[in-house]
Image 1: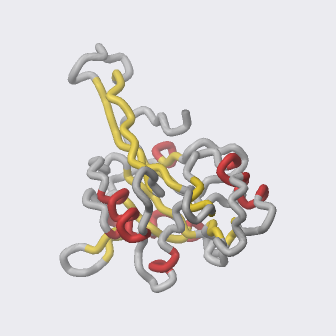
Image 2: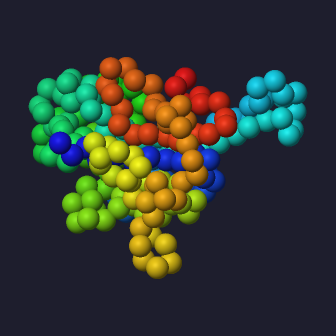
Length: 210
């Protein structure tokens, strides 16, 4: 079964916010809310360091709907508005959404919100209108640090595709990323929902599980 996902190489992310801006621009996300947030982690003291520069470390962490394999938001929806699509992404049928916000409360990551005017819940759709046409999600296509990659988690993250290079070809994670181990691959906290997004972080303390 297809299960689309995103992998972010946090060692390459420069915190430029291009992914957040592209998401808002393409999807018409209203002011004051984000489908894709970029958080700064740190600066924090390095292990065994003095806690003063240069013994500090920092990285940026992008947080959005994790398009979970066992989504709590779908379980609690009384109208089946929140559902698992054929491509494995979690979508919201606005025609069925009654704005009860049960899904907002059930989401472990706080990435859903109620659209005040439309009175329906919104979140990252993984740019379903683009990926259905074979395109990359906007946040991946516009990543200035070449840090984000998109693909089917069932096929292995090494085969995920990133932004196009000057020759028009998409980069492939296994050919582009610096070497990493299984210990360098992380997820946001798993509350039984099995998040599918992955984060690669080398040589720094992972704090996205806190």
